[in-house]
Image (cartoon, rainbow, N blue to C red; front, top):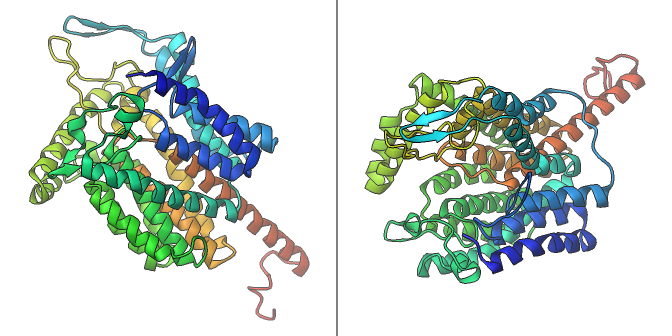
Length: 467
């Protein structure tokens, strides 16, 4: 699935990023390099060099923002050693152990899948490092209240512009990717739902486009609630919400029905708690599945009351999850490695797996340790932001921070039924962690200063009876 136009678009994107970093502040340039790539670059096309992962719409903008950060900002961030660093180390170097333990071939009928070794270990580490580049940039660069607000503004502006081609594709079917790049990035039938079409434009799938629009709606609601940001954010929220409903994505619509009212009306503390519950649910989901505590039958029955097609799709997902999880638990700690070794094959060697959920892919390839490192790092960013929200300097910042935490948390929950972990999610996760660390450091400095002034660490202007 390649074309000359698609390759040209990839080749031009570093130039686009260079222009953005030369004319806009680093935060805005980073946002539009990542968000623009996700919304505009082709799916399924990559530029490959020996010993280097393919440059595509995920990896190429990640390289661009990392280089832009180093060149324009010019100062690396120096975090203290903690849980985040441990999880990053496991995520980066765990695949080495996985590769060393999977040198044996896998036999599936007449098919033989070779073992993996040192070369594959190096390749896996490179891939993991590229995945984390947006996280590193977000953590180092997006450490201010203004950066947090810029994230939400970018989501709203991008959502407004993207809604136009999305509405077109709802009416006339998903065609933009074919018209511009010359091929369909996925099976067309997957975009047909309930007698209409799911728009995807250049995202690669209607579900990804719908989740992005959910993020835009949530961002607009936060800007409206905070009293700052874009003008007429209330009307923008209503408009984007209507477009989201028309996307025909039950998951994204359900997320919107839960999260947007929370952002609009609930206290920031409640929003933060819901975000934490979301990521903990995702983190413990594999354990719940192993213990058969997920009400899969009830969920299928509820889906059937809405649509037979949706119920059938959900049933297939659950059945494949069970088979893939059983396969993964044969090598539970470090997994089977990459290249299809963790998948299910029939007696003839045909791959019969349907890998929808990112969580089961992660466990199959890199084991429970790899899953905990990846999902744990994403969850930690949300938990840290939720804890640091109490140190926010204003109600506005509190709302914006908890809204971004809900956006990231919902993206993490979406990795249970789907496998669309985007560079945007890693960038926003890093932004959450960076801002949380900045708020906690500022609170510690204030506490230390107050302790010095009043001569006792437990007596500050706000706690002293005689203040």
